[in-house]
Length: 188
Image (cartoon, rainbow, N blue to C red; front, side, top):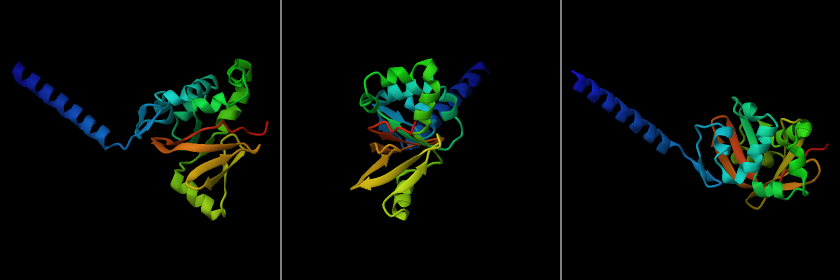
């Protein structure tokens, strides 16, 4: 009797593992920062694995936005790579990460987030409808202007700063991430 129970448990475990492996293989993942991004995971669950977004993850934690970005969403996030933060004037990141600058950090980070799930196809359609430009309202309340240069998607901030999308359409369970090469800044 015990051998039959062990066999049943082993068979169930094998079926469970096989089903999970098959599901993982069905997911269309994308490589970002040396890690696979899984559509079944949320924005934070994926971003913490990207070696190219460690500064962003640290900033999201310092700003207290982890819970928000793990929420239902959906969100479209223009996620600055580490090299984007490196372009800021020396000391900017360190200053923003200080607890007394939390509100300013939140404003900068939420300026990179648009409510809704906008893949590159939807953004391109909005650009076409807008005769070459699309205005996107950010969660922070400001606007970004999306536009194309050849096949490259760009966003321009309220100050005229431009950022190029380096990796588009990293779909998440609660939205989509587009990696960008420059931090965009709201009017402060």
